Image (cartoon, rainbow, N blue to C red; front, side, top):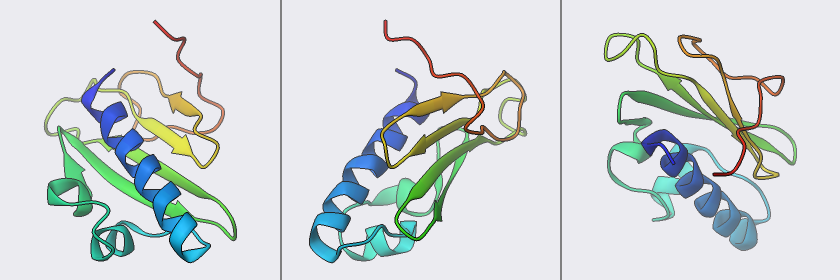
Length: 105
């Protein structure tokens, strides 16, 4: 598991806890304010990636977009409220729901 995948799984656990407490999904700031995320991840940064949560009415998408100044060949990741992870081709700036789901190793 890559560091970006691990960070997205932390966001997933925080979102699950936040939803159980408040009945809705949350932004990075709300997760941080609730004490569910900390450090650089709460700021949307880490391990050569920028993290962002996009909220829907009853859904979210957590994006890990590579910082091209760190490494232009990193893949991008997307995790949604179903727990499904999508990984872009190397060098893409953002993953989408159309990107493949990695096989378990």
